[in-house]
Length: 162
Image 1 (cartoon, rainbow, N blue to C red):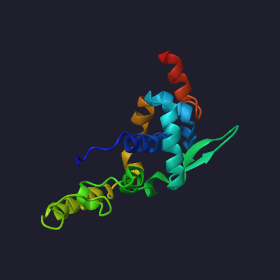
Image 2 (image 1 turned 30 degrees about the horizontal axis):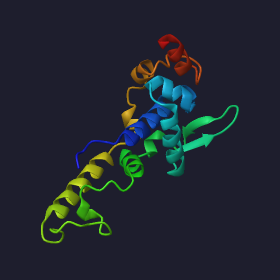
Image 3 (image 1 turned 90 degrees about the horizontal axis):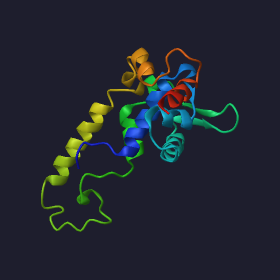
């Protein structure tokens, strides 16, 4: 295992950061996809999972969209990473049902990797989504929100790009 986040986890954090910085705190999958230049289809899966995990409120229909289910300061980065990574285990020996390692129980790798994983989540637990967006003016500029109405920044960015 490396300490590299999966694409799904990366996109999960990006969606939450986008919504934390969005004017009005609401946006659509299409706007977020356009701002980051990533697939809407993939973001649909991400948004669905974030909704299941209690991070987002997903509203369908006219006037719908995505918004944070609770304040960004109350959403732990560790919680998001754990929720989006699923059962991402660092080695085979962490999953007793499918473990075929002949060294299981005879080496200390599981203990050492377990400790490292615990420290990894401990470090992430010190930060919230709000901490990731501490420079909201700069972030809004990067995401091309500027000072426009809620939900209009990404549409404009998409028009400007192509």
